[in-house]
Length: 326
Image (spheres, rainbow, N blue to C red):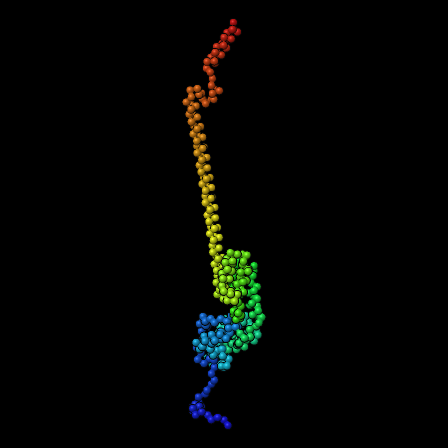
């Protein structure tokens, strides 16, 4: 026996009012893709999928778009006026979801469970892949995360700072898998890899750590980060000191070059003074020679002629001629 019809429902039916099921387009505003681009809810790892789903639902509900990711709610009929706006919105939210997920996760969903173009279908497949993932986390991923920390080596990086940053990142990555790696492990790796490169600061940090009570058991992640930051500060200060010494050395070289240049200039001035003194001495000698009464025309003293002896020679030649003529 069928249930009796509600009297109120009977009145509505008699009035010709037709009821239809709720659709995803009901009460949905005009879709604005630019507004959605500003909203970021990133999913980097499936471990936080449950929290990510809550954040996505909260954002979409604020804009009355949450029905678009609910596959239990019917889509509007293609012949209805609201279908065009719904289709644009559903495809837009699908793209927004992909943009807010790690690319590898999107590929995993699309390649493993079929490609989607609408938001409700894509979200259903995402939930199928990652729901309760934190309890089904792949053991190989956890082992790989731990191994990347223990195999972080200094020689594979260009400088010590890059090595320290990467060691911090790898240690923090284990926390994404909720692995309780003791902070003393990456700290020991840090000390071992840098002890020969910078023994002074490492010895100081080792002493600091071993002054703590039971560091192997109670050293925290913050303690590890503090040591890393202290070493990074030491590296930066050392580089600053080297640059300062280099600048001082360059300045000293410039001063030496300047002094050498000054000495060369002084030597050139002395040479010019000596040349001028020699010219003055020559001029003085010329003046003395011209003032000498025995000086004749510029001849040297050997060229001076005795006028008396010359006259006697002429008289003798004349006498000889007279004797010959007689």
